[in-house]
Length: 578
Image 1 (spheres, rainbow, N blue to C red):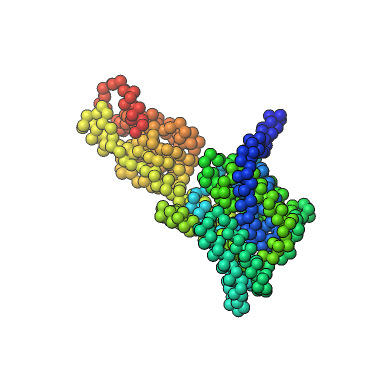
Image 2: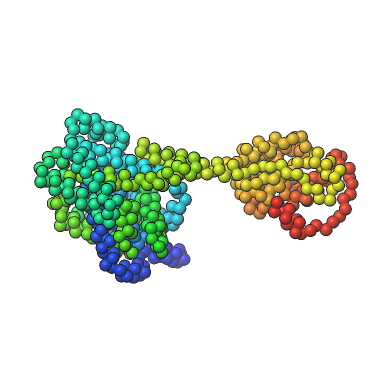
């Protein structure tokens, strides 16, 4: 009991902040504070936009950026990660809002946070490395398309149509715009997007998103543009924490959405942390601590009316590029946004929705890495197929289904490629101590096959067809020293093939079975089948001698005594390796 308690305490201490984190924050505080200020300026319009896009309002986006941003920075596993509301999460939240309402989203966020903490305790963070790059690129492309399409109602200046499918909503918004065009909203959204895209190429260090939003707001206010709908009234501060939104009776219906949100939060956060590591020298995130930090952030954010959060790749990249070196930068970003919530809520409430739509349109465009997509498309046909399927599934279904589809297709294609490496090749008999005449006589009755590669479920059926289709001989020798791996299906297929050959009157002998394969063969009874007639040998020359003895007993070969020689250990070793 005490041992289990000690292990749990050790595991918990590994997930909590350490003194090294505080020491890192004290190294270059001025640089981190400036980086945090820059990230806050960039994050403000994004937090507002993603809050509005999620369906819970701009205040929910700000609450998430402040609460989740601070907790994930403090408890997360990356020194450079910046967390908050993201476009990918918004894609998942929109149908949850449509079906379960705002309280359902908050409950899902709380449940997802608990799941993330559990994943951290189970050390599940390391499995992120097994997600194929085409799946990541595919769902990033799909997310970018969905984010862009989600902004169509606000960018066109029409009320959001009914529906939770982004393609349907976009089409209905376009139909409404055709009936009643709102060119003011279109102009504001397009101007903000163009300023952001052009400005990012001209002066990447400047926060053109904030500059464009401020300019659009001033133009809308000074010109009295009624068609430019503002965000609306924001609360002057964060609401008091509350669990009043939790409905215990709805837990069963919200379990599947919570799993989807937790999966996305884990995937996007660990991907973002990996990107941050790749942009720096000497930084290495702890994936389990990152899951723990994101879990705490998602438990706390709903208590203050916030939506589920993840690590944000765009904001993290800005944080790294502006010189951040510790968690202090992300904490500063959250603190500055909190000040804005308390001090500038009346000003923020005047921002036109069309301007925020322009910010998110530009963000969606910048998410698409044309070079990476081109590289994946040119790599192999399988990579291109996985990328396209994942992107289309993201657009037509949702992100979690898209990732599952991408992983299943990638795994299937990988298994197919591995299975194709397995081969069953007929090899000539070693002459050994036999004369040319004896060797020719043996070759008339014995055939030897060498099995190369994995013998598992994906390749077993083809192996069975090839092996049982051998010519009319009396002995088959299977050289198994080059079998790289074997599962139960492969062992059962081998057993079935041996039994079918036995029924045809063909004896089967094996050589070079490895210890790991022996256990699998023994578990399905294949090894007993070979041992029963003494037809399992350590080396191929021994198997050939056994085959000759079998043929002598059958009267197919003359019982001519062969000269006894002392085996050369080195030759036997080389033969076993073959």
